[in-house]
Length: 368
Ligand SMILES: [Zn+2]
Ligand SMILES: [Zn+2]
Image (cartoon, rainbow, N blue to C red; front, side, top):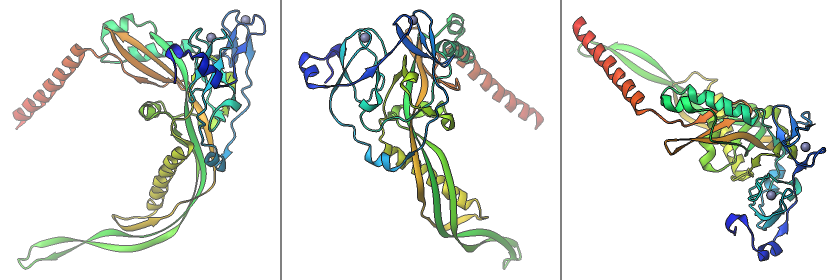
């Protein structure tokens, strides 16, 4: 039950547990600090003071047993008190960095207070919001079908904000015993009763069996809402190998959400990815044309996981009263999204295409 404006009733506040959230304050002037990807610092937006963030702490793998036991969300309602303006609000259980509805400050929920599994890894934003804006403009201006008028007026996106999306990666040492029967085609020729030469196809079958050992490192599964799957795939790859240890410092000034798909669901997805890979690795060892039967049974050992947050800039631009969303990988700068399309340019391209085909047809007729 979230009241309008996120404003809980006195009764709701009395019933709810209090959650500890934090904002970082400037040592010189007391204003809020936010994470500045350009310098890897916490920066005061007011007086410019910068405090270094330790970038040498890398994420560790967590034993798989923990994912099995740690999946409960807990349905308690929590309240947080904005450290900036003091307003009290109800906390959505999937929020890690809720934005205060009154003053706009991001309050980061302290790890101990998070429900369910706690993120242990994070890919920090490496691109600042300013350069992300510029990179977006550059990307949009390269869009061939975007109207000239749109490109000319585009100085920056109308809105851009950094958000951390949840994901899991899995490591696993797999051993897969397998067996089956594969077939390879071969051909013979002989004369039929009328004396014509006929080519006949035969298949020679052979049995296979063995054991494949394969180590998987960082099999990536996004854990956000199903709607986000395509977008997060478009922005991949993510540098999960150099994931940092989860730290609240990286979240100041950004929003973040907890997993929507549970760790176990993500593991099932990862297992499917590994099984496909194992299957094609085994079959790639043989020269065959048909599979008559094939059985394999993948066993996973020493499985570990990382529950990590990945950085994405989310923004939009409006053109002729229509909204065009875009997304950007906060580390690599890869962009995915929509820009307006000029009907005139599409029309001309289609016409040129049709003319080219017609031209080829005419040429073909002339040459005949
Ligand atoms: Zn300051
Ligand atoms: Zn506030």
